[in-house]
Image (tube, rainbow, N blue to C red; front, side):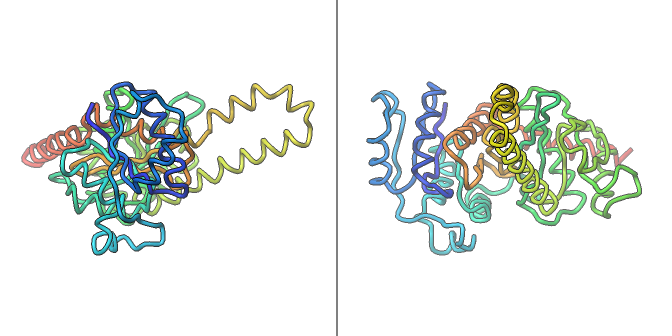
Amino acid sequence: MSAIAIDVMGGDFGPSVTVPASLDALQRHPDLQLHLVGDRPHIEEILQDCAGDRALLQRLELVHSESCVSDDDRPVTVLRGKRNSSMYLAVDQVRSGKAAACVSAGNTGALLLTGRHLLRMLPGIRKPAIIATIPVPALDRNCYLLDVGATVHSDGEQLFQFGLMGAVVVASLTGRKCPRVGLLNIGAEEYKGSREIHDAARLFERSGALEYVGFIEGDRLFSGDADVLVCDGFAGNLTIKSSAGVVHAVEQLIHQVAAADPDRSSMAAPLLDAIRQKINPARFNGASLLGLQGIIVKSHGNADREAFTWAIDQAIKEVRNNVPVLIADRIASAFQTTSQTNQE
């Protein structure tokens, strides 16, 4: 497998999380090679403290960076004054072909701008999208939501493209040949929603390239009614962060119940552990930046060691399936189908 570049300095915890998580990924994937991009002395210090055999460390390459991008940095400053940052250099590893993908927990806006600058957009794609994973516990499967923050406002054509890209990713990750695509809307009735939503719906209905299932309301987010849910970045970001807040609230409730009645909680411990595992946010970490001529996976900024390892796993899957090429082919095919339909 080609190497994956890790922006070691990104995220709330930086190398203290990203370096041990990288070693965990190497242990789980014997054919994996990683390029750790960041402050080399700091990385070497952590590697000395981490238990790992020599064969494992031989699959690591360290790339030194002079600076890092903070959450407070405006995205444009990365291009103007932080081209020696760990984020920029990690993405540049993909541009140069030294790595097949980049994983970062850093500033989302800066990562997106850097990706668009260095990797460029795929032909036919107007705007990028970030796709996130949402659990559907009742069906023991996942749903995928996009966009969750890359493009705040999107017109109908962009939403249609998001659906095409999302379907490609879901098919490659899950093996579902015809993922069901729905539009997140304020109501299921055909007259509800914005002009952009209705424009997108018409494109989905005419396309024939997707299994379109119509409008889906927010209360059906975890129902499994669709494999891919499409919305603009404003609605998607609110949705995904609200969902994370609900999970956190449920976790707090479980702890409160356990503390209030230790005897009962000990009897219910297996059930509570199963619930925690089902809704554990770490298992769903890793949001892909779609529409670029290369693979970038965005980890949540406060990801712990386990969660960051899941983000690396996400990048590995996309590399193995060559997702950017699949998206480019799907977009070209959809354009051809639409053109033929219009001629008829």
